[in-house]
Amino acid sequence: MRCPFCRDLENRVVDSRLGKDGDAIRRRRHCERCGRRFTTYERIEESLPVVVKKDGRREPFDRSKIVRGLARACEKRPVSADTIEALADGIERRLQESGEREVTSRAIGETVMRELHALDAVAYVRFASVYRSFRDVREFMRELEDLIAERRGTSRPRATPRRKRRRRT
Image (cartoon, rainbow, N blue to C red; front, side, top):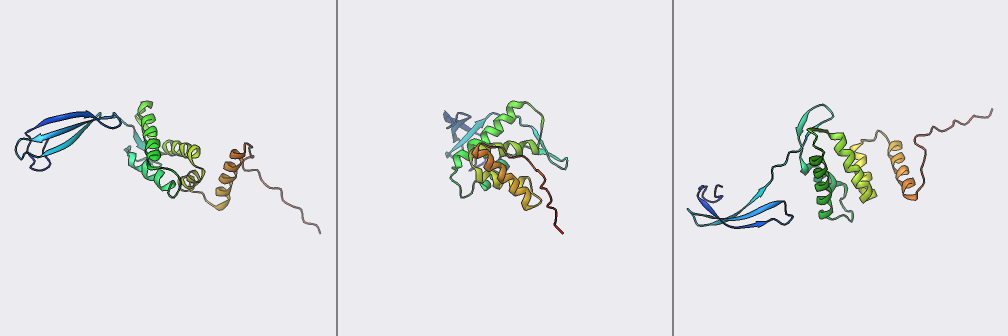
């Protein structure tokens, strides 16, 4: 490990401990050349699937994108940063456990929406409005009506066409 201060490779481990969440090992090191101490973390290299975008591009999974999306949806809502981190951790863990080599961005987005739906209705609607990119206000209102009906324990028929009134002559 290279010293961040003098860039020398000669150092020794002074102390090793399990990280806060148990997913990393924290090591305190002492540089033999400059005498300064620094901390390193050792983590398991996890194999996450490649994300297939709508346009067919492939890119590595980026957990920070999920955290940013969740944080944006939960802005000014009673949802803590720890809860957002826990949701992102859960989504990431499920992707790892699935063993899939590729996952669509749509599947990730739907998973995020399910998590938000269970957590906070307003955050869910915010995320859904951006993610699903509603074409007009009616689509947005349909989503809200479905959410309200679900909260009340009733179901509303989806997209039922209205009858046209006949004009009297």
